[in-house]
Amino acid sequence: MYKFVRRDEALDEAMGGDSLFALAKANDDVFKKIMKIFRDYQREKAKHTIIEGGVTYFSMLELFNNLLGDSNVALNDDRIAAELFTGDAVNARAITGAMSANAFVTQLNTAIDATAASFRQNLAALRDSFKETYRHKDIIALLRDTKVVTQPGLVKSRVFETAYILDRILDKKRFLATSLLLGIMHVERFKLNKDEDTARPFYNQGSALFTLLTFSYTPALSVERRSTWEQGVLSYFQRALRDSITSKEALLDGLIDEGLNEDWANELATEIAKKGTAGVQEQITTWGKRIAGYEKSLEALKLDAVQYGWKMFGSCLGIDNGLLPTTYAEATEMWGQFTANTYTRVVSANSASPMGRQAILATFDQALKAESVWQKADFASFGLTLNASALTAMSYVGPVARILGWYTSSNHAGLTCGGCRTVHGSRVSLVRLWHRCSSCKSVYCAHCASGMALYAAMAVGVVSAVGGWWMGMGSMVYSATVGWLTGSTTTRTTSYFMARKCKACGTQTEAIY
Image (cartoon, rainbow, N blue to C red; front, side):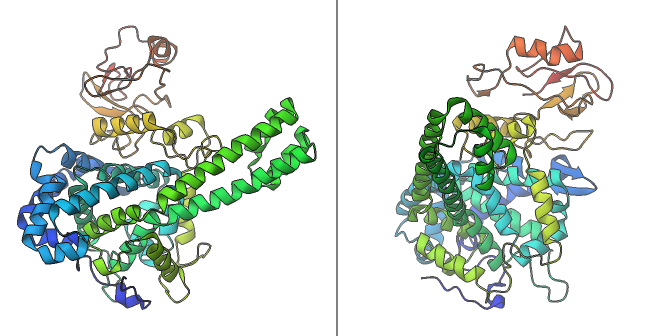
């Protein structure tokens, strides 16, 4: 069992302790390879910095692509595990629960499979995970210091970037290296953020552990809440069938009373009214299947193998082994201790304190709303079905969306728009592309390159994979959108995403892929 205690100051320790992070740090061969990749990236900070409203945000997206793309096999999990067990076998066994490096890698791979599956199937729960994180006073203080949470665009970038990085970390080849890199990144980035009076670091064992639980444990809570709500909607449809309620007006009132927003309720009521009793029966079947899907998701989220995967991830961040839960039951107990009234650093979900928390939550909601078709496409391209009624029915939009989301990041990240300073890839999305002017060589992102809010459209059936990830638009879509709006008949392209005009000099651009 873990040594969690209720006294606030007992969790103030800096990252390290008995952890894989500490073992790696003590092993020069492991740590220096990862640190070099981080330092090299830091030297190009300006290239990866987003600026919005005078607030800067250092995007780390391309950093993880650099590590995963490094050809050095010493960064692979089996090699790092062997180094850690050779250097300090006693502590390595105590932390991993495995007797050898090979046994550890085998157990880790099983856990990664389970953790990755549960994470990718429940991306919609990430919205709640972030908001739960904002209940910890140290996290609020840290975010206030960095000011990222004051700008909706940066908040959106941070959410998408976190989802993307976690997706890349859940890789069986370099889980340890990418997790250790994230640990190094956090320690380096937040080492100066401290309480002015006590010099206590805001990024500490307690705040890191609480944040980990919001990703490893609270998604199950989110799914349970969603399932409970949808069971209420299902019960309403069953009553409607019994009482022969089929008029649009009655259905609309009933659905709004059950918590559906007006647009969604109106859409369903209109559809059901056209079909009468058969329409109500269809909804009963549909909602029943969705609820069954939630039950399956909960089974995956509550597997002990999932908690072991997150435990090893937390250990790579530098969380002490004695604090990390190994089973779902332990995670449940720990969450209860964190959220009990006796632990004063975590506030209730509806608390107005500490100062600035409500403003942060308001900015978060503003950043992640999905009202327009393009906002919905923005989320859907990576599977983040966060707040759109048409999308929240799906816990995950499918492998194609994930593949395409990965494509846009890995192939476009690291270029900074000369106009709006967006770093493409920090917003993992299909609808933001990069273009380089063929004359002045300036680089701009597509949505601001020529002052038009024009986004790339993707034709059905034109996506293929040949020697790498390719995305395409058909000639008909191109002619009806970009070609027509730019008046171009001689557009030069280097990918199937069509070119734009340079905002700086007016010359036709070429798409970068």
